[in-house]
Length: 262
Image (cartoon, rainbow, N blue to C red):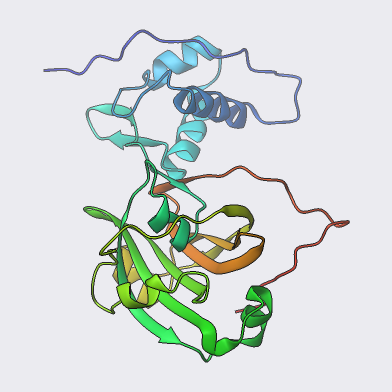
């Protein structure tokens, strides 16, 4: 049985006087409709012919726009069936490991401890956390929303702030708490976002190709007026959409931490 696209919805008119190419304007318009829910996950998009007629552009223009959307994993093209909106990405807040454990909220991934190490922390991390290296716990973790692996995390945590975390973190096991942790007055977080190439270690854990692009967040999390965690999370960009709210750091108000070349 043939799959029929739902009623075509027209986007804002393309601006033919703009220096932005028409194919880029078209893919941006379709992208905005997907983000706003006009086109939902799994639904068919109009055919190439319909998009040409609707926007008054050539088939080459439409194909360029769809190629960009496909590369961005916003759409999926199925031979003989048509073009469909891609599955919804997992929504992840830019939250530290501690905050995720204490106040999971709607995003509650399963977290498995890969490696645990106490002390021997680099001076830059110790300085950022304002704690002695021997009082800092480093955890490497795998974050999952079964069956998909969402991210690899590396957390540096002040144990004097969360002593209960030490006993809960056993390598090779899921990170679970035997009892609810004490409440924590979480404060601000400083977040930087960058991209990185996926190495063999990350590729094996995340189930993606080596050298694929990872989206990486580096963050410092505060509670009760002091920094309690430095965290680095590496996500496959096609599986996760990051959500966060904060005040940007300006040149006049520099961040108190930084990660140098790796």
